[in-house]
Length: 112
Length: 113
View 1 (cartoon, each protein chain N blue to C red):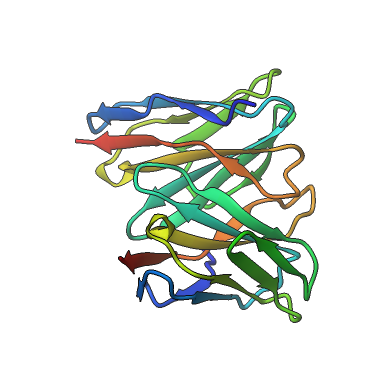
View 2 (spheres, chains in turn yellow, cyan; view 1 turned 90 degrees about the vertical axis):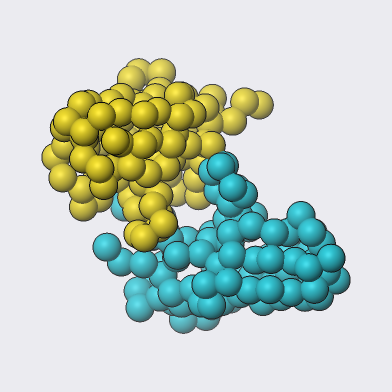
C-alpha cells in the first residue's frame, strides 16, 4: 500500500513569507503528527491531529499551525518565516496514534 | 523539550561485526520504538516494543524493552554496508490523549567494508 506522502519535497522561502506543507497519510490512518528535524535540536514534536481535531501540541510558537481534513490529509502552515525555521519537516501517520508511526520522506524547507 | 539519551553520537564498526546501541530516559514510556534514517529520507520503523522486558527480533536486529520502562537497547548482528545510517530510539506513552513520540538525538553508524 502507498506510504505517507509529503509535498513538496523541497521548498525555498524568504524570511517573512508563509508556507503550507501537505501530508497524505497511509489509507486508514486517522492520526497524523508533524515533527521538525534540525541538526541542533533533533526531532521535535509539533502537533498531532486525530479525526480533524488537534489532540496534542508541542512547544512551538503560534506561527506554526496545522489542520486535518475529513479524508485524514493534513496541512501544516508556518507564518512569518524566520531563518531558524529552516529544517526537515516530517509527517507521520498511525491508525490511532498508539502503536507507533510511519514517517514520510519529509519536506526540506530552506528560509533565506 | 525532553529527549532520550543516546550515546555515543557516532559509531564506527567493521563489516561483519555486531553492534549494540542503548537508549535511556528519566521518564517511563510504555512503548519503545527504534527507527533508522537514511540521508534525505524520513525515519523508517525497525522494531516496536510494547511490554516491559519484551525482546523482539527483526532479521539481524534485536531490541529489548527495559524492565524499568526507562531504557531500551538495539543490537545489530553481522553488520553489512547497508546498515549505515542514523539510528533513533523513540519513547511513546501510547495513550490516546498523549501519543507523541519523544526521540533521542540518534547514533550515526558507519560500517567499514
